[in-house]
Length: 128
Image (cartoon, rainbow, N blue to C red; front, top):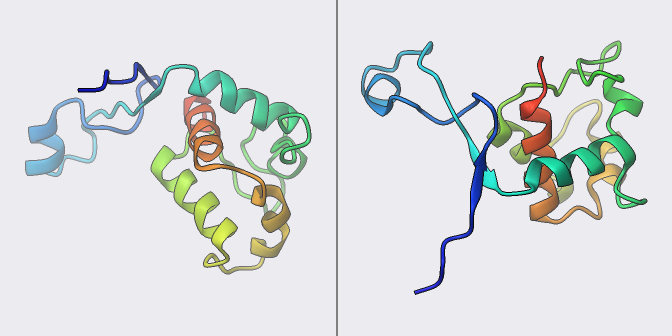
């Protein structure tokens, strides 16, 4: 049996900390903690803040220096990591449509699934 990879929590976001309250009682105020592979937040920070050495475009160009949005471009700080990965994945596959979708296609073109997870880990860890 293979060893399970280590994982780290993304602050206090996004997986039920009290499953009964979240799943059974559907309490929207129940806390969440999302777990990602160790090192994902640091890798995501490099991709988000520098573009990862040309792999992508730094997110602040469109989403603002604090990732809280810039003009009509939405904020990505503090968003659900599953939401962020889904948006990146769908944009890369061409299934996400919308006014800004075409502008994001070259940004996500070279990202791997691991890169998308790292970006989501980092952005989810930021204060909205």
